[in-house]
Length: 269
Image 1 (cartoon, rainbow, N blue to C red):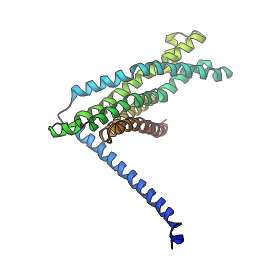
Image 2: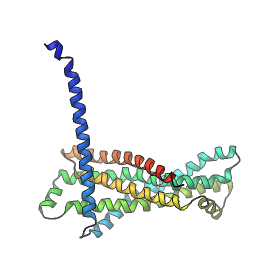
Image 3: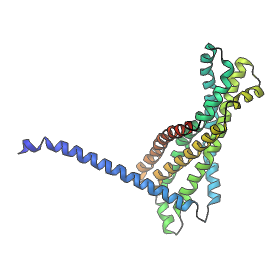
Image 4: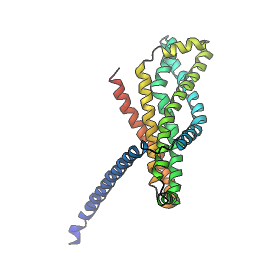
Protein backbone atom coordinates (compact mmCIF):
# COMPACT_ATOMS: atom_id res chain seq x y z
CA UNK A 1 0.00 0.00 0.00
CA UNK A 2 2.87 2.37 0.82
CA UNK A 3 4.48 1.76 -2.56
CA UNK A 4 1.29 2.88 -4.27
CA UNK A 5 0.65 6.02 -2.23
CA UNK A 6 4.22 7.26 -1.78
CA UNK A 7 4.75 8.31 -5.42
CA UNK A 8 1.46 10.23 -5.28
CA UNK A 9 2.12 12.12 -2.05
CA UNK A 10 4.89 14.38 -3.40
CA UNK A 11 2.68 15.38 -6.33
CA UNK A 12 -0.23 16.13 -4.01
CA UNK A 13 2.09 18.10 -1.77
CA UNK A 14 3.31 20.20 -4.72
CA UNK A 15 -0.24 20.93 -5.79
CA UNK A 16 -1.20 21.86 -2.25
CA UNK A 17 1.81 24.18 -1.92
CA UNK A 18 1.08 25.85 -5.26
CA UNK A 19 -2.58 26.31 -4.37
CA UNK A 20 -1.66 27.82 -0.99
CA UNK A 21 0.80 30.26 -2.59
CA UNK A 22 -1.78 31.24 -5.20
CA UNK A 23 -4.38 31.85 -2.51
CA UNK A 24 -1.91 33.92 -0.51
CA UNK A 25 -1.09 35.98 -3.60
CA UNK A 26 -4.72 36.84 -4.33
CA UNK A 27 -5.33 37.54 -0.64
CA UNK A 28 -2.42 39.98 -0.66
CA UNK A 29 -3.76 41.67 -3.81
CA UNK A 30 -7.14 42.02 -2.10
CA UNK A 31 -5.56 43.59 1.00
CA UNK A 32 -3.62 46.05 -1.16
CA UNK A 33 -6.84 46.89 -2.98
CA UNK A 34 -8.58 47.65 0.32
CA UNK A 35 -5.58 49.71 1.47
CA UNK A 36 -5.71 51.91 -1.65
CA UNK A 37 -9.48 52.35 -1.38
CA UNK A 38 -9.10 53.35 2.26
CA UNK A 39 -6.51 55.95 1.25
CA UNK A 40 -8.87 57.61 -1.24
CA UNK A 41 -11.68 57.53 1.31
CA UNK A 42 -9.66 59.27 4.02
CA UNK A 43 -7.17 61.46 2.12
CA UNK A 44 -9.72 63.93 0.76
CA UNK A 45 -12.05 64.10 3.77
CA UNK A 46 -11.58 66.80 6.46
CA UNK A 47 -9.73 67.37 8.67
CA UNK A 48 -6.68 67.77 6.44
CA UNK A 49 -3.23 67.35 7.97
CA UNK A 50 -1.69 70.19 5.94
CA UNK A 51 1.19 70.83 8.34
CA UNK A 52 2.20 67.16 8.28
CA UNK A 53 1.88 67.02 4.47
CA UNK A 54 4.22 70.02 4.12
CA UNK A 55 6.66 68.42 6.57
CA UNK A 56 6.63 65.15 4.63
CA UNK A 57 7.11 66.99 1.32
CA UNK A 58 10.15 68.71 2.82
CA UNK A 59 11.51 65.39 4.12
CA UNK A 60 11.03 63.65 0.76
CA UNK A 61 12.78 66.47 -1.09
CA UNK A 62 15.68 66.73 1.33
CA UNK A 63 16.26 62.97 1.44
CA UNK A 64 16.62 62.79 -2.34
CA UNK A 65 17.89 66.22 -3.36
CA UNK A 66 21.65 65.69 -3.18
CA UNK A 67 21.64 62.23 -4.75
CA UNK A 68 19.24 63.33 -7.50
CA UNK A 69 21.41 66.36 -8.29
CA UNK A 70 24.57 64.28 -8.67
CA UNK A 71 22.85 61.41 -10.50
CA UNK A 72 20.91 63.68 -12.87
CA UNK A 73 24.05 65.57 -13.87
CA UNK A 74 26.02 62.36 -14.42
CA UNK A 75 23.18 60.79 -16.45
CA UNK A 76 23.03 63.81 -18.78
CA UNK A 77 26.81 63.98 -19.11
CA UNK A 78 27.33 60.26 -19.74
CA UNK A 79 24.36 59.91 -22.11
CA UNK A 80 25.66 62.80 -24.22
CA UNK A 81 29.19 61.41 -24.20
CA UNK A 82 28.06 57.92 -25.22
CA UNK A 83 25.74 59.21 -27.96
CA UNK A 84 28.36 61.42 -29.60
CA UNK A 85 30.42 58.69 -31.39
CA UNK A 86 27.34 57.30 -33.19
CA UNK A 87 26.29 60.76 -34.39
CA UNK A 88 29.85 61.62 -35.44
CA UNK A 89 29.83 58.55 -37.69
CA UNK A 90 26.89 59.99 -39.63
CA UNK A 91 28.06 63.60 -39.39
CA UNK A 92 25.02 64.53 -37.30
CA UNK A 93 26.53 65.96 -34.12
CA UNK A 94 24.22 68.97 -34.48
CA UNK A 95 21.35 66.64 -33.53
CA UNK A 96 22.96 65.84 -30.18
CA UNK A 97 21.07 68.45 -28.06
CA UNK A 98 17.75 67.32 -29.55
CA UNK A 99 18.57 63.66 -28.88
CA UNK A 100 19.55 64.39 -25.30
CA UNK A 101 16.43 66.45 -24.60
CA UNK A 102 14.08 63.80 -26.01
CA UNK A 103 15.72 61.01 -24.01
CA UNK A 104 15.84 62.94 -20.76
CA UNK A 105 12.41 64.55 -20.90
CA UNK A 106 10.52 61.49 -22.15
CA UNK A 107 12.14 58.74 -20.11
CA UNK A 108 15.29 59.31 -18.07
CA UNK A 109 14.25 62.17 -15.77
CA UNK A 110 11.06 60.63 -14.29
CA UNK A 111 12.52 57.10 -14.26
CA UNK A 112 15.82 58.03 -12.58
CA UNK A 113 13.98 60.18 -10.03
CA UNK A 114 11.53 57.38 -9.23
CA UNK A 115 14.27 54.77 -8.80
CA UNK A 116 16.29 57.02 -6.49
CA UNK A 117 13.17 57.90 -4.49
CA UNK A 118 12.24 54.21 -4.24
CA UNK A 119 15.57 53.48 -2.61
CA UNK A 120 15.79 56.57 -0.39
CA UNK A 121 12.20 57.52 0.37
CA UNK A 122 10.39 54.19 -0.03
CA UNK A 123 12.73 52.33 2.29
CA UNK A 124 12.63 55.16 4.83
CA UNK A 125 8.82 55.20 4.90
CA UNK A 126 8.66 51.41 5.19
CA UNK A 127 11.18 51.31 8.02
CA UNK A 128 9.64 54.26 9.87
CA UNK A 129 6.06 52.94 9.81
CA UNK A 130 7.31 49.39 10.41
CA UNK A 131 9.10 50.41 13.59
CA UNK A 132 6.00 52.29 14.74
CA UNK A 133 3.89 49.18 14.15
CA UNK A 134 6.34 46.89 15.91
CA UNK A 135 6.66 49.18 18.93
CA UNK A 136 2.84 49.46 19.05
CA UNK A 137 2.84 53.23 18.53
CA UNK A 138 0.18 52.88 15.82
CA UNK A 139 -1.99 50.77 18.13
CA UNK A 140 -1.62 53.41 20.84
CA UNK A 141 -2.75 56.11 18.40
CA UNK A 142 -5.84 54.08 17.51
CA UNK A 143 -6.69 53.54 21.18
CA UNK A 144 -6.26 57.25 21.97
CA UNK A 145 -8.90 58.15 19.39
CA UNK A 146 -6.63 59.67 16.73
CA UNK A 147 -6.60 58.54 13.12
CA UNK A 148 -3.17 57.03 12.48
CA UNK A 149 -4.01 56.04 8.89
CA UNK A 150 -4.82 59.62 7.88
CA UNK A 151 -1.90 61.11 9.81
CA UNK A 152 0.75 58.52 8.87
CA UNK A 153 -0.31 57.05 5.52
CA UNK A 154 -2.33 59.71 3.71
CA UNK A 155 0.18 62.48 4.42
CA UNK A 156 3.14 60.44 3.16
CA UNK A 157 1.41 59.23 0.00
CA UNK A 158 0.25 62.77 -0.84
CA UNK A 159 3.76 64.08 -0.14
CA UNK A 160 5.43 61.64 -2.54
CA UNK A 161 2.73 62.24 -5.17
CA UNK A 162 3.34 65.99 -4.99
CA UNK A 163 7.13 66.02 -4.57
CA UNK A 164 8.28 63.39 -7.10
CA UNK A 165 7.03 65.42 -10.12
CA UNK A 166 8.88 68.48 -8.79
CA UNK A 167 12.06 66.44 -8.32
CA UNK A 168 11.65 64.88 -11.80
CA UNK A 169 11.45 68.35 -13.37
CA UNK A 170 14.56 69.36 -11.46
CA UNK A 171 16.33 66.17 -12.59
CA UNK A 172 15.49 66.95 -16.21
CA UNK A 173 17.09 70.39 -16.07
CA UNK A 174 20.13 69.07 -14.21
CA UNK A 175 20.48 66.31 -16.82
CA UNK A 176 20.29 68.88 -19.61
CA UNK A 177 22.95 70.89 -17.80
CA UNK A 178 25.19 67.82 -17.79
CA UNK A 179 24.55 67.39 -21.52
CA UNK A 180 25.40 71.05 -22.13
CA UNK A 181 28.71 70.72 -20.30
CA UNK A 182 29.73 67.90 -22.64
CA UNK A 183 28.53 69.68 -25.80
CA UNK A 184 30.12 72.99 -24.80
CA UNK A 185 33.41 71.27 -23.99
CA UNK A 186 33.63 69.51 -27.35
CA UNK A 187 31.98 72.02 -29.70
CA UNK A 188 31.94 75.33 -27.86
CA UNK A 189 28.15 75.67 -28.24
CA UNK A 190 26.68 78.58 -26.33
CA UNK A 191 24.08 77.99 -23.62
CA UNK A 192 21.40 79.93 -25.53
CA UNK A 193 21.95 77.96 -28.73
CA UNK A 194 21.96 74.68 -26.82
CA UNK A 195 18.65 75.45 -25.09
CA UNK A 196 17.02 76.47 -28.36
CA UNK A 197 17.96 73.11 -29.89
CA UNK A 198 16.87 71.29 -26.72
CA UNK A 199 13.28 72.54 -26.74
CA UNK A 200 12.81 72.51 -30.51
CA UNK A 201 11.88 68.79 -30.89
CA UNK A 202 9.75 68.63 -27.73
CA UNK A 203 5.96 68.78 -27.97
CA UNK A 204 3.20 69.24 -25.41
CA UNK A 205 2.67 65.47 -25.20
CA UNK A 206 6.25 64.95 -24.01
CA UNK A 207 5.77 67.23 -21.01
CA UNK A 208 2.31 65.82 -20.26
CA UNK A 209 3.44 62.19 -20.39
CA UNK A 210 6.47 62.96 -18.23
CA UNK A 211 4.29 64.71 -15.65
CA UNK A 212 1.76 61.86 -15.57
CA UNK A 213 4.58 59.35 -15.14
CA UNK A 214 6.04 61.30 -12.23
CA UNK A 215 2.67 61.56 -10.47
CA UNK A 216 1.99 57.84 -10.90
CA UNK A 217 5.51 56.94 -9.77
CA UNK A 218 5.20 59.17 -6.70
CA UNK A 219 1.87 57.65 -5.72
CA UNK A 220 3.26 54.14 -6.19
CA UNK A 221 6.34 54.78 -4.06
CA UNK A 222 4.26 56.30 -1.29
CA UNK A 223 1.52 53.67 -1.23
CA UNK A 224 3.96 50.75 -1.41
CA UNK A 225 6.20 52.11 1.36
CA UNK A 226 3.21 52.86 3.59
CA UNK A 227 1.58 49.48 2.96
CA UNK A 228 4.74 47.55 3.72
CA UNK A 229 5.44 49.51 6.90
CA UNK A 230 1.85 49.82 8.15
CA UNK A 231 1.30 46.05 7.89
CA UNK A 232 4.68 44.83 9.10
CA UNK A 233 5.09 42.40 11.99
CA UNK A 234 7.58 39.96 13.56
CA UNK A 235 9.61 42.54 15.47
CA UNK A 236 12.82 43.98 14.10
CA UNK A 237 12.87 41.36 11.35
CA UNK A 238 9.57 42.76 10.12
CA UNK A 239 11.01 46.28 9.95
CA UNK A 240 13.85 45.09 7.73
CA UNK A 241 11.44 43.17 5.51
CA UNK A 242 9.17 46.21 5.26
CA UNK A 243 12.03 48.45 4.12
CA UNK A 244 13.36 45.88 1.67
CA UNK A 245 9.90 45.03 0.36
CA UNK A 246 9.11 48.72 -0.18
CA UNK A 247 12.21 49.21 -2.34
CA UNK A 248 11.93 46.04 -4.42
CA UNK A 249 8.17 46.27 -4.99
CA UNK A 250 8.22 50.00 -5.79
CA UNK A 251 11.05 49.62 -8.33
CA UNK A 252 9.31 46.67 -10.00
CA UNK A 253 6.03 48.56 -10.27
CA UNK A 254 7.80 51.68 -11.58
CA UNK A 255 9.21 49.70 -14.50
CA UNK A 256 5.81 48.14 -15.24
CA UNK A 257 4.12 51.54 -15.14
CA UNK A 258 6.84 52.98 -17.38
CA UNK A 259 6.08 50.37 -20.04
CA UNK A 260 2.33 50.93 -19.83
CA UNK A 261 2.48 54.75 -19.94
CA UNK A 262 4.99 54.75 -22.81
CA UNK A 263 2.74 52.41 -24.79
CA UNK A 264 -0.30 54.61 -24.16
CA UNK A 265 1.57 57.82 -25.01
CA UNK A 266 2.92 56.33 -28.23
CA UNK A 267 -0.65 55.85 -29.46
CA UNK A 268 -1.16 59.64 -29.37
CA UNK A 269 1.97 60.55 -31.30
